[in-house]
Image 1 (cartoon, one colour):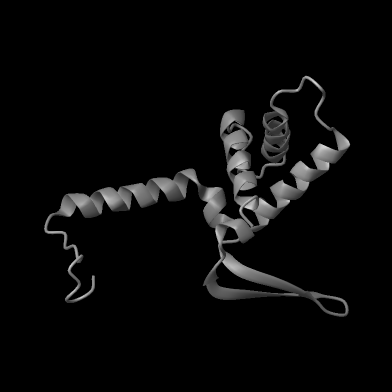
Image 2: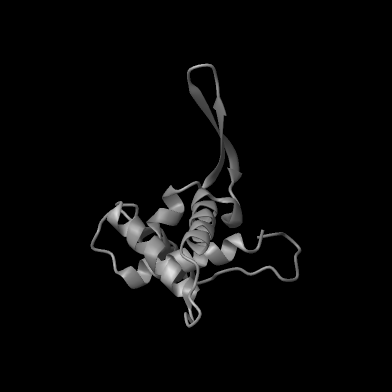
Length: 133
């Protein structure tokens, strides 16, 4: 809170802070992949026979994260290798489902009991972020 700011808000009761804490906790548990994957800016440099990674203290923008770039590349690959048919009304949904199932089966979401619908929505979210760049 900023001193003297006319828009300054001060919580005088515990409930608003509790609700914020619970929302953050729920997000971190439910969206673990988002937290674990490329949260901080990271660069990899190739040396003669090794690789060196450097992490920044800055957060990685959502549209710059690895999974967003990966989904965009995979989507573009599917678009070229399996183009939509003449009567294919929602080819994007089919591609999102293919990518989502692949991520589930590879264990990317930490278990294979995750619903395909969740994975498909996550892939769609990442693909939409990639279109903003």
